[in-house]
Image (cartoon, rainbow, N blue to C red):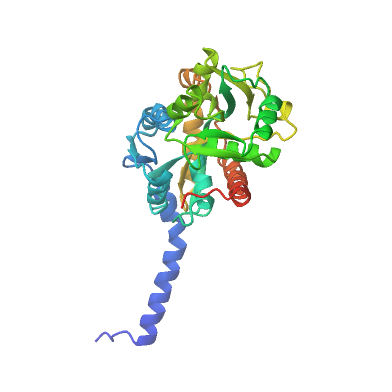
Length: 332
């Protein structure tokens, strides 16, 4: 008659099974990774359909789906300055089937909001930098300020400074405005609006006096002569406005700030999947059929490696945290 296992032998068997499982898990994970993707991939866009980052991601999604052999679907999750969509992505499994489209809110919100339920560095793995565009310091075409120094002189001569417009708390225009005030030790009133169209309406109606919209949204008004560009916030001059100096050239307190969109995956996503995604997306971005229209629209195609984009995200987190600390800018 076969004896029933004793407690000791059962424990030994369990330990052996666990050990075998541990040895097999890398193999099982490799096999799982090798079979990826075997179902649709979702890209969460934490903003409404039609905004800049949404348009860029939709340009890529169909081509990426063709390359991977699976549908790539866009899931717009706007709300709370992007936090709703970002937090949903942070809670998703790290299996390569959920990606997040990023903007400045991704790295700024942890400092700007009193509490968010995500960490942009710990909860996510960078995949690729997509595109970027600088901010541009603009004033109305009939403004007496023709240079940055002339604008600064007006601000200093006005009690309380001048009002500047932004597309909302935490936007690139907001942080650029605060950096401008901090670096030049000036005062000024921040007027947040809902987006770029409201910025331009306020400038043209002289409700505000200057602003730092992203170049891609402002270039048509600059080219048409309705707005005057005083400086760009990129490290070098922009090819679309070659005669406009950088803030470093135009001011003793210059700074760099650009709006960069990218893609991240949930932390724990296997490196093999990250690398495959990066490879395919970079190939898509370097296709002239994709890069041409983007660059014509005043975007710069980045197409960076995961580690390069990760380093960029860490720099932005630290930069925005410092701006919030010094300026006291908060949303709640």
